[in-house]
Each structure stands twice: as structure tokens, then as C-alpha cells.
Image 1: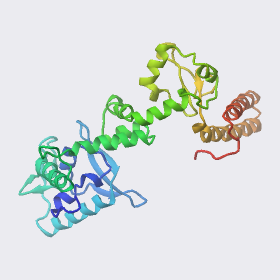
Image 2: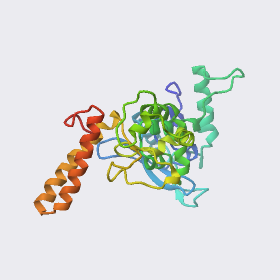
Image 3: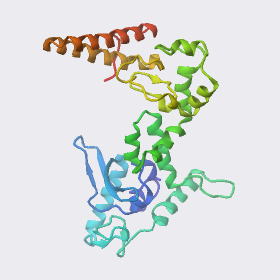
Image 4: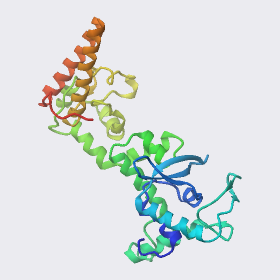
Length: 306
């Protein structure tokens, strides 16, 4: 895509924009929708989902630079005029406009991407491109899920209106889910917690194993995982890691140590206030965390999650 000479096409380099925006949302960008976060990182204001509510998302520096170049070219030509948006009915000043009309998605995305695919050899036996503009959205969603982004973050980045649309990406990242699954349920896994002995003994029921295979990503908590099945109801593992179905692994040791530090601070504060029961409650949590770290062969004073 760097070899494309057209300013309009280079300002929409699909590979260089991490926003995950849909092609039609990009096509409808306005001239004043590019600015920056306080640290200087470029950000783009784009419509989100079918309601076209605006959202702010970070933008790759190459894409930001290309948009700046396009804006400068527009300013040297005719001043940006307002046009009535065909979807919202509002008067807007579109960025990708030519002779009073916004560029078609066919020109903005498909034609440029097809040319880039042919140059890169990304075509099938019939010469058709194997990459589409929409595929970049799926790439962004999958990468966010695999790198631990919260579901709410994925929803915001992709402009999804419901969690059901974004949760697909948590299921797509099969390799990451498999890795986490094996860390807890795999042979010889190092685990700690009330449910650890059940796992070591291989006493999980067949129905529990089947549910966990397809829903394992739903079990994650701050300090480990709760392997409670849906029919068993909710638990309080996040409040006190003593639920009968709670289990944790060395991966969570930094979080456990961080939580331990918080609990020690709360003990001091409660003691200063004379809240004896609160002191006892937080001490119990510290003791539980110490026990988990010991079972994992992890030191209590090691690195913590910031």
C-alpha cells in the first residue's frame, strides 16, 4: 500500500490504521475529525455502529500523516463545503469528497486493496484478492482479545452495540484459549486453590469438561479462575478467593502479590480507624493469598502487576 500514489488511497491505508473502523465509517469521515491525545498520539473521531454515535480511537502515525497531507491538498484547492449526509441528514464536510460527492467505497477500498494484493501476490488461483478491507476489523478484534483486552474495550474499538457481537473475538482466539485451558486443566499443570486437588485427581465430570472446553474464556477472574458451572450459580471468588471451585496458576502470581499489597494497606487503615472486624477480614485474605502463593511455589515479595 505504500506504493499507492493517490493521496485519497494512502490516507486510508488499511494496514496502518488500528482503529478497526468499518469501511463505510471511514468513507464518511469529516475534515475536522483528526486530532491528538494529550501525549501526542493521533486519534480519529468516527461514527460507531448503526446509530453513528461518535467515538474517539487511536490512529497509526502513517495514516494520520496521510490524512494531514490530504487535508493540506484540500485547503490548497476549493474550501471544504458542507453536504447533507445521506444517512444522518446532517450538514457535514466530508474528507473524501470529489465534485460534491463522497467517494464510493468501491474506489476508496476495494480498488486500492485489490491492486496492493496483486502486487504482493495475495491472490487465489483465479487472480482474485485474498484480503478484504473488512478482514482488517476481524484482525484488530482478534488481536485485542488475544492480548487480554477487556470485552468493553473491544466493543468500543469496533463500535459494537452489544457484547454478543464482540464476544466472538474471544472465542476466535483458539490458540490463546487453548493455552490458558492447558495451563489449568492440562496434565501436570501447576495449580493452587480449593479446586486444585479435584483437577489433579482428574475428577471433573464429562459434562463439566465439555462445558469448559467451549466456555473456558468465561471463567477468568482477577486472581485466577472459577470453574463453577452455570447451573451452580454465581460465586464470590473475586471478593474472597476461597470459593470451592476457585483455582489459580503461576500466571496470576503477580496479581496475587499486588492484591496482597492492597490488603496489607487496608489492614493498616482499618487498624488506625479501630475497625477490628475489618482488620480480621483483610488478614484472612492475606493468609489465603499467602497459601495460594506457597502452593504455586511463588514468593510473596516477587514482582507485581502494576
